[in-house]
Amino acid sequence: MELCHECNSDVIEKQSNIGIKIFACIVLLFIPYGILICWVPFLFPPKYYCKQCGHIMDEPKYVDWREFEKKKAEIKKEE
Ligand SMILES: [Zn+2]
Image (cartoon, rainbow, N blue to C red):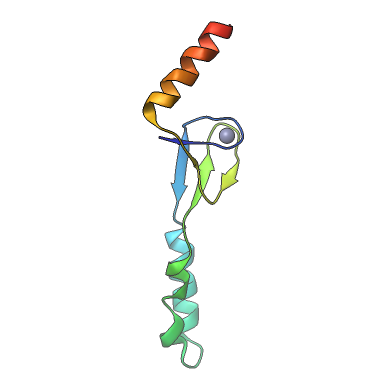
């Protein structure tokens, strides 16, 4: 279970930016010895984007399914 740090929403999208990485790779191919480092952009980890609040994070908050259900139940009780 992956949650947003800001709003605890689970509507999170993984953004690998593969288009940008391929573009950077092609650019690197044009510089001297660029072929040796053109794979570097692919090492960057993907970003996570929360569709609920727009927060962008390196790592989402990992929560156990059961814990998430517990939290949800607690919130319902409070309401
Ligand atoms: Zn959020």
